[in-house]
Structure formats: C-alpha cells, structure tokens
Image 1 (cartoon, helix red, strand yellow):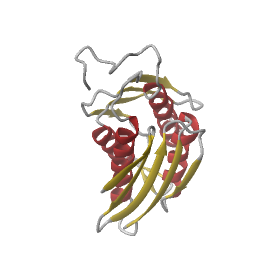
Image 2: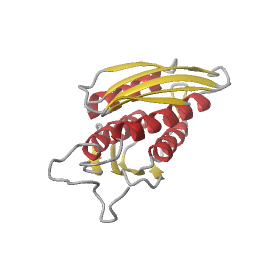
Image 3: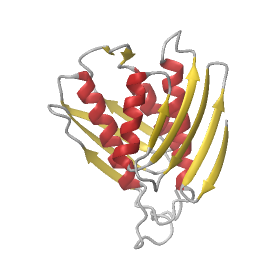
Image 4: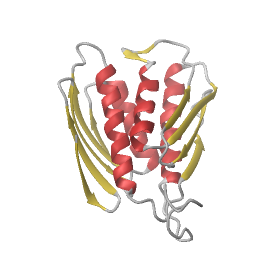
Length: 201
C-alpha cells in the first residue's frame, strides 16, 4: 500500500492485492463532494454519507473479487479509509481529538464516539434485525468499522440506541460516524501542540 500526503489535510492512498484494487483520496477540509465507485451499490450509498455529512471530499475507486462476496472489498476500503484519516490528520497538533454524534434516521438512532488517540479500538454494537440489506451482508458493517478504527488508530464506539429497519440503522451509523469524525478532526486555535497531557498521541 502506498500513500501520499498531497496537502496538510489531504491524503491519497492506493492499495493493490490479489483480492482488491483501491484508490482513495480524502480531504478533511472539503465541502462534502463524493465520487464513489466500488461496484457495491449499498456500500457506495453509505460512503457517500461519510463525505456529505462530514463535509469531507472523498473519492473512492475500488474493484475486487465481489463475485466471491463483498467481504474483501468492504474490509479493504475500511483499511484504506482508516489509513487516509491517519495520514491526513498528520501530527495532530491543534486537533480537537474527540467527537461524538447521534443522527436519528426515522426510528433508528446510533450514537458514535471517536477518540483520535493513536490507540485502535472498535466497539460496534449495531444489532441488525436482518442479515442482509439487499445483497449486502449486514455483518460487513462490523468488518468495515473495525478496519477503519485499526488503521486510523482511533477508539471508535458505535452503539445502536433504537431501530427496527436495518437500512435505517446502517445509514444512521454512517451519518453519525461522519459527524463525529468531522468534530474530532476539527482544528481548534485554542489548542496548543498535541491535545494530550502526555504531549504525544
């Protein structure tokens, strides 16, 4: 996997394996522009929410062995997105660091909390009512968010508070993740250096 910092808050990453080929660019200071093409319609829809509701510019071009199933592609996009987040935030100076959001989606509510701590952790308690949304396996949402958290080196908690419709729960999770990430990656002029009493993250 190769990565390139193209600006202070922009990262472009390519990952090529025998299972997937992914090119991704993330601009943390964008305006919500999304250009997403993974070949998996529902996943494209969810990734678009990250861009739109986090006000990130996000470009994803991904191909892979989706004739087998969607697992490799979804997990690998999570790996690359997490790596791009880590690269784009850089040394974390001036960063807010923490973010929390809960975006209601009709009857569904998912709360998301993020700490850009440098210590990867993922608690993903979405408890989907169905095993599939269309042809998308709902268990892959767990794989995606774990991959993002591990590669961004963030503590990430996603907890379903309510919801009976799997699509609504998933959409609420992605929207809340986007808003929480936007809050955590915000630069606060009051923060001097790295936001930690240890002096490093």
